[in-house]
Image (cartoon, rainbow, N blue to C red; front, side):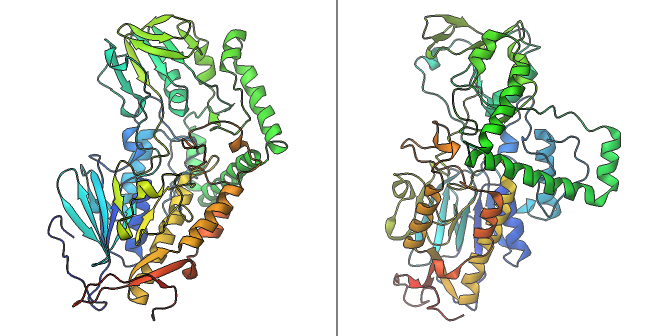
Length: 517
């Protein structure tokens, strides 16, 4: 497939070789490319806006960046490693792992870096997608896989005067390694997962660190030291050890979900454990009062760190819980009128998690705009397929985030599901596959109903959109997602026939089974 010169004429079944464009070269895009090529769908192109593959593990290079999930679970099932340096690997090691897996499965050469997709549009005449980029290139394909994920667009808070700040500033997901923090007065705005990792790293080197917190977090311990030699040798030499640890961690993560799903029973026990750990770490009463969360355990992301809370009690660190009202040239102004003078502001304000692939424009059948279709909240069947958008698949889409597991588990499941859908096209001689609207609506109702009574509903969080709808998280367990998405149900879909090579009239969808294989 080549940019700007891709064929536009309708093709017959006999000459058809599926062309697929994957947008995003993170863990999901790499998983999709590997799965498709393994099963004979080899004409795959991966468009990536960054200069390298890796997704969030390319961009998030802040000090202390690491995964919360142990590496023997946070890895592809077909690419297990025995040489991880520690329980939860650091960013550079995970990034190298993704590149190594892509290289060993020969999909690294499919990536076209520095390519920002701006528009995807479906042609009913040709049963093809046209993809436009900011670099003014045009691609065409039979199917597109939107593997942009939920954690790729940094969220910048709208604070009055932010553009007047006279010092230096940057977002934690775009860390400025060229700016020296040593001896500086630094403000960190936000205390989410990223700040929890980098604050303990920079606190010893800065002159003064002021951490601005909107809400506290529930914590569980994680020291994450490098493996001693004896553990490294055991991991290398005992073939079943890593697999055992992987299965054990899978069940441990499912137990976290159990606590979130049942906040009045199991959740109380988990919350008590968290509270005991936090009390043992927060020796200073004032810091303890400020850092303590005021919501149900599990409603927001539970954080794992044994170093963040002690860092808040260092002599050169101040935790501020007064609301930020504006930014002045000198620093940060809070509601009590205090001007916190700083040399640098680090925005640890997370991501636009509910935006998914936007601001990319996606136009489906009959001119349907995805942004308008999702105006009341993003939704998709099993987080992957959307009515009126034939041959379009989303990875790490609506309601497929995990509060207590490995997203790679979901991505592998989704890659296999997408592969099955595309295989249906070739086996049936169909032009397109599209989830039936009533199927997607029913699955969404059932999914949203499962949030009732869970901890997820007991506070505001980044899992929700502006309407309060939970659009990020899967409401159940990893094993349940696998049960529902491991095998594609053909009856859930309608099929569009291939266009006639002579007449390219746009046909109406046909029910599953109406086309002979």
